[in-house]
Image (cartoon, rainbow, N blue to C red; front, side, top):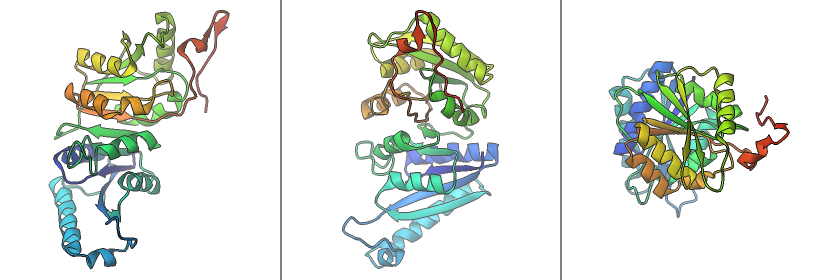
Length: 297
């Protein structure tokens, strides 16, 4: 791993994200890009810092931000780090732009921003980043002195584009001496035979040479609740999710669901968006043979 972006608004949850990102960066010897976005006044069409400095309190605000970023660098004794403060009013696009510019392999954010309801920096912006990022996004809720995960749930359909995106997630997963619990959630409207689900999970684990893992099928009324209830059952530290088109990002990331995930004491959520066309679970198996739905390079 070469570059990690962590977004901060200096709130408590953002501090948790910085702690985790700094720990991962040190473990991987990656460069840490520490990013803060200064909200540009909505009535100003001038994005220049000169214009911002001339506004009441503008120069003082920038100086305070510089000091806070430097304090973070000194606190974590960061060596390979770049601090950025950007003047824009579109926070999530700024994060995505810098992720592209620096070819980052991971974005780290806190669970909430200044206020949980408003989500002025992290919260509503978090779900937008998660639903649009081309790389894994790690959402951190708890404070870490060192980012360690003992039990991780990977919820997926285990076919299609997950084969393309999982190698990027595996870079993060392999950092930790963790037990990986592969999870397929069955619902009344999207039922798949146990034999078929196990076949897909076994092929997936074999393809990526997984070692310390379990295979799990959980029945619930919907995907979100299945993930939440299974995570609570095994006391997992982290949930890794790869929505495959069969269940939508808007469902798993809506505020009520995310709050539920965070209330079950899960430390973090790792997400990677996929664009697999909608295929029903039964369509990959025919009476006369098994149709292989694994994306090749």
